[in-house]
Length: 371
Image 1 (tube, rainbow, N blue to C red):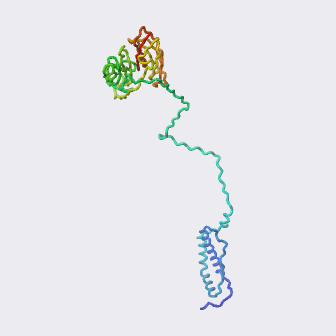
Image 2 (image 1 turned 180 degrees about the horizontal axis):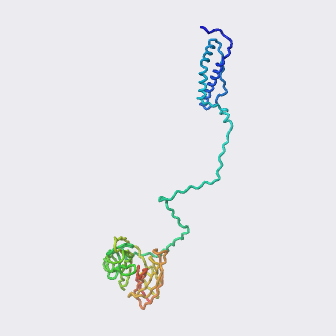
């Protein structure tokens, strides 16, 4: 074949185009190695040199390589340029191991001298719970002194209407009491100024001389829409015919509107006499009276001594010693009297009405009087 030689020539120098192509080939190989190193986060292998191009010892091979480099030199130049632009390879100045070889010191930020402002409280609304702040210097409440005697059951009870009831005209009354003179119960309705609005008698539904139930009805007339009133129920003493026991209840009288009734139940005696005892003999012209109960006003109690005809032979006032109004307390007073002969008598204690001349509650006790 023409142009080919099978002799083994000596070293043949490379042409300038071949040397340029070899340099570009080395650059492409370095770019490929850089991309591999960057992809594996390792140091770039920049210290490796491109492998040397050894001249072929065959004339056929040398001639073919020369013709190949001559034909594709320009293509290699263009490909090398695009390869470098696409690779975006940046050769590091030093290996990564060199950057991490020396220890680093981390400094914590110094605390700020400016105090942190308190959080802003949320605005108050309807769901915010109310906080009641009471003064710490609240005086201690008085402890009621216990009585050394018990209170007996109430002798005269008003079951209906109960305290604070609102009634219209007419209204029904029911209760229990006695014994009373002629087995009679007296009913009286008083206005807020003490005037009598209505009164009548009712009878105990029992055998004579015993306690029992009573039922009655009262009618009234008032000029105002409503008025505070007091209903009194009393019985007479069988011997002297004077009031032997009285109980009362506050009401609201209505001229228009619907009534509102509050029932009541039997309880202890509101005022009682503990000393002397029932039917005890009294001598010497004086007697110590002790008792207890509760009141609705701060007016003093009135304690009286009556003879066998109901005439007054001794009287005194006594304050009920209780912590506050409406609480249990005790009273004590000495009554002086004079009688010409031995006879039955009676001790009476009652609470005065406030605002007008009247009685809120009255209790009595039979005794025997001697000079």
